[in-house]
Figure 1 (cartoon, rainbow, N blue to C red):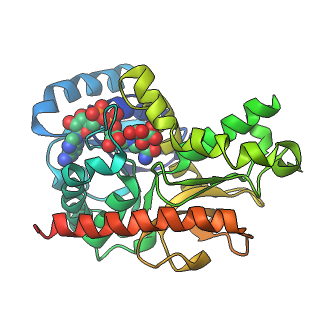
Figure 2 (figure 1 turned 120 degrees about the horizontal axis):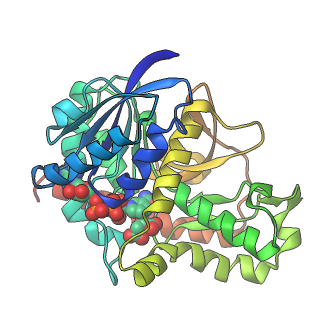
Length: 328
Ligand SMILES: NC(=O)C1=CN([C@@H]2O[C@H](COP(=O)(O)OP(=O)(O)OC[C@H]3O[C@@H](n4cnc5c(N)ncnc54)[C@H](O)[C@@H]3O)[C@@H](O)[C@H]2O)C=CC1
Ligand SMILES: O=C([O-])CC(=O)C(=O)O
């Protein structure tokens, strides 16, 4: 059994965290032999609720959980953490787009970037879940200059899981047989869910599913799935978001199997002609806790036009976020 690592979950009194904490504390992210100290950050008015979450974590009697530290102080929450799940932020309600949350949420990620910079381990792995996730991750990285940019990522794994579920259901096959669907771009309604490299039972998805579906309903269903859940539940996705956050960090920690790629929002290095310095979802492969963008995939003109749309939105979000952070 290795020494405990410190892991922070922000928004720890909220609905995603309520599902996520169980998965982490149960050893499903960092491994069944990795002891954990969990630090739980929320805002002062939520400390009472958070105390209840702490009670439940204790009552779960998780063998790997050595300590739970609830706090409203980012300096305490981020101290020496090896992994950070940045969930805490306002969720959208019916009728809103995720970027409508930008002015309210982006300042949270400025403060938390600074706190990570000052208190976290320099190899901390950061996952931003709070929306608009890509731009929040960019801001967080911007305010944490002592931590490599590669350590900041945004969650598009939920979109990837949604895409796989749509294809598995359409083909009537087990979801574990559906691989290498890609989410390009922003975690928003402009994202491009791409089945061109996907396989189901080892065969190309494009040979099994009509192109008319893959270029229309498949794309829009995944793009609008978050809104569909809000319309039905009156609250945004939580259980599936927690599962996706756990999938994202688990794969980052343990790596991806050969030939399988996953989608993550990462700081663009210019791959596929995407401008540098926006957080863009790419297909990545992971080894030794380092992700690498999968290179050389073909993009037809339809795909290219979709990437242009989502790039434009991310550039606009970046400009707006910088203005908010600079007080303009
Ligand atoms: N990237 C993705 O795929 C997804 C992202 N989300 C986003 O995740 C975020 C959280 O969603 P829920 O858990 O459903 O919301 P929630 O409202 O249930 O919980 C959010 C928690 O964050 C806390 N919080 C607010 N400001 C904070 C701060 N400065 N520091 C620490 N904690 C703070 C709140 O007090 C609350 O307890 C939202 O922005 C939502 O839009 C949700 C689903 C999927
Ligand atoms: O749609 C929302 O606002 C929450 C979210 O990001 C998702 O479910 O993908």
